[in-house]
Length: 117
Length: 115
Image (cartoon, rainbow over all chains, first blue to last red; front, side, top):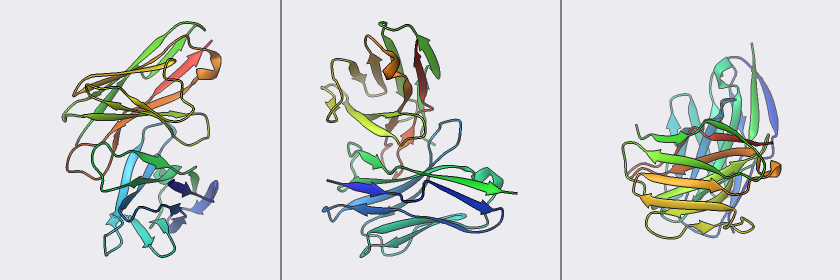
């Protein structure tokens, strides 16, 4: 069974600093996808970044990058130059299999990130 | 980008009544939609997978007779919470994956309060 673990319930970071949010996963499927979502207090889920299990390079999207270490089964999110608007819950998620539209994703427990001015 | 519209945003209902939540994919066809429940300060827990034209697949421990899912068209899936009780109070959110994209698009969520 697939499993996602986020060990940091909460983090405080000074504005403009970089922050790393940890995520480890467990699956026996060689094909899978990893996601990070941001959930502000409004409740909406904002897609940040995706990493496929066969991708050779770490994914990057603007200030977001994913530190993918396949052998360690970790997929940490790095946010560079944090901003006050980055304060939110962050969820790591995983999809098993090649990823049809019918493939479900499951979520980790989340990390609440708070940015200090 | 792909949008999933979810209504209502919030609803308060009396114990014992039923509540229907709708999710519509606005600019893509969603043969599959996923329904999640999120209790305060917790993660999203998958409740069921809704399949257009066929029965939904429920996760273990989710009562299919209590949480009725209908996916009658390629753009609409509904979740009906039947005979709601205060313990059903939660944030319900739907999701679908537009074709040719990696990310799953989520509705804005429905905050249900049963009094």
